[in-house]
Amino acid sequence: MRNTLLLRKDPDNAPVWRWLTLDNEGRPQGSIHAGSLADAASEGSGQRVVVLVPGTEGLLTRVNIPGSSRKKLLRAVPYALEEQLSEDVDNLHFAIGPMLEEEGWPVAVIRKQFMDDLTAEFAAAGLDVQQVIPEILALPYSPEETSVLVENDVALVRTGYSSGFAVDSDNLGIMLAARMTDEDASVPPLRLFVSRASLREGMSEYVGETRVEPFAGDSLTVFASGLDARSINLLQGAYSRSGDWATLLRPWRATAALLVAAILVSNVAMGIDYFRLSRESEQLREQIEQTFREASPETQRIVNPRIQMQQQLDKLQKRQGAGGGFLSLLAQSGSVLRGMQGVEVTGATFRAGRLDVDLVVANLQLLDQLKQALMQGGRLSVEIQSATTGQDQRVNSRLRIVGLGT
Image 1: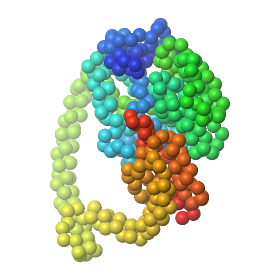
Image 2 (image 1 turned 60 degrees about the vertical axis):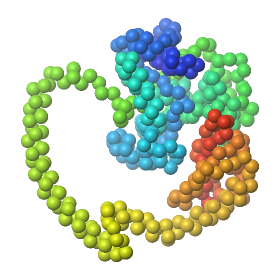
Image 3 (image 1 turned 90 degrees about the vertical axis):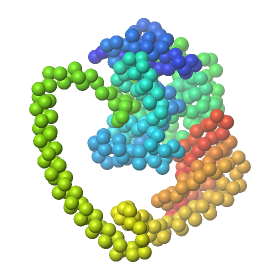
């Protein structure tokens, strides 16, 4: 097994990269170096290169989708997570990790623009990178503990083998306490990695067991101790590594030429079949259009009869009962939302009996108060889907509201 070159962009000085060499058993070799990505590339020749990306840049979640084909999963995951994401899925990149038996498929979500910029940096520096891993998944992990690293007013929290989140260090205690309330279960001990004497700021709300492990120097040493080659690799789909195929295929050129000739002959046969199937498809489309005209005579313009028929069915389903649930949830939650100071509703969607409300609140404490107020009376179930602190220190959040006993 080759040595590993572990890289991470310096959080205090963005153009600068920091790197550390690990032997084939994961032990650090030498000291941490700093410089440009090109400098790192000159040292990384012949080594397995792993890059860590900031925890604040992405989202770790999971989906329950049947099947084992990763190619099909990558196509299905964006639609499975669409309702949970505030950004258009077309602007996001999705990467899948190894399946967890009872928890489904772990997924890492990150902006395509970030990945484009990052891979462009690799190419410009001539760096061949084998893995790009969310740095949260490089924190030391134990199933009996929750690992936290505090650095530069940001706390990275690893809650499971492929799960975790990033939060402002001032709000770390609140988020950990909220997990205790939401999950209604015993919380594992906290393993806290910090680099300075003021270890417990922002932790007053958390009452669980905490084990503090100060570290000296760069946090890259902490990530090196938790690095796992099986972690979610962001180099998937459009960003997967191409490899040096020219070198690999050179001995097979003659075989490849015969294969190309066979493909050409096959394409001719396929062209004949395509012409025949096109005629059959046209006839089938005419039959579908005729069926749609008979079922919906009031429709004057037909563009895509299959889609238009589905739209008509969707309208009928909404008329048959979706409205009552929406009005009931809106009536029960509307008075609470209007009466809470410092809460601004920015949007709402209703689907499958669930009301998702996008809002902006003054702080996380107010978000928790709003959740408790909505749940008071036992008629509503409320779940915090997301909570992100903006530059104005206000919290952008999404609440999922479901009626109980309906």
